[in-house]
Length: 369
Figure 1 (cartoon, rainbow, N blue to C red):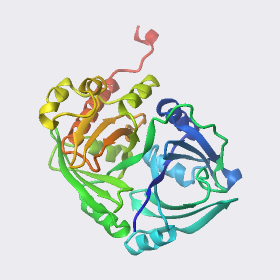
Figure 2 (cartoon, rainbow, N blue to C red):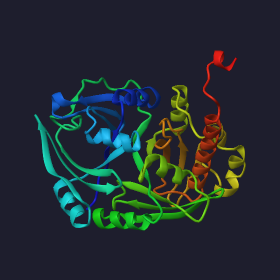
Figure 3 (cartoon, rainbow, N blue to C red):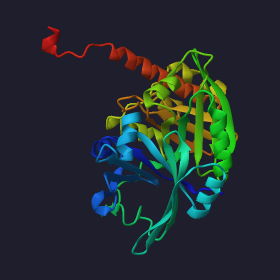
Figure 4 (spheres, helix red, strand yellow):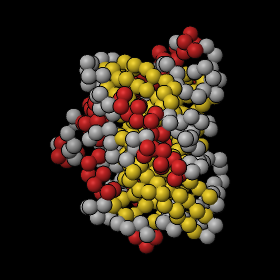
């Protein structure tokens, strides 16, 4: 069993329109389609956004007993569905269930004119599930008969983003090995990378699993209970259990993408100058000018196949759980050994700043006087 890639990601959110505004104004996504009770999506309102090959579905429940409403009550806004593209969704469904995944929705075909899409759903981790998607017909259709596609003009400039590169998943202590084994047995993934990450007094274990063709990559992270609790423990507490900590978006030009997004209000994690002062000694020559990386806090690393450039955006969620990553790959297929600790150090600096700001009383100017 192999997968073509991440077909789409569905977020359950308290207000789909508000979430769509943030992704559109800050990250450059465009509204492509919408659905609700009038299109057969009972009890919910969904908005489909896209950019490049990235597809993000934002769903809000219209009643307290809708699964999206219940998810948001437990976890806040977050990823509820990671959908995998497949050449044969029914076969992938059967294999996944035989390998230990729970059957949640049997294969179902959605049709509209010349388009047909087969979907099936199985369990993943925590409250996150996997939708298996097989597509035939016009590419512009998403879920025929359920999502009404809008007549959207093509962008006047090239998209900043290309695709969803990988998802990072936090699991509680003791669950990393079992989660890795689940993806090996249910989906045929391989372990392609593993590392122990130390950030100050914190520690975490990481294993990266990937579909055989490289289309889907999940970074699985577990905190080290023998060390000081840190940001992974915070995520698990604030999110209320395992979940997607961040999604990485592949960029065509990470420097221009960071500049454009920053102009539109997106914040990014900072990196100290010392990181760049020692860059040449650690990695040798890099493809992008170091001064362009330094001025924006972009990190660079390499694996056996090439280089990669990465940066975390600051979280915009009230629980400070989910956030986005940008990545540009120059031949690299996996992950380097120095970027992951550096990325999490940058996130820790961000959280330290946030914790300080939380201690400032929220008073009006008049009240302060």
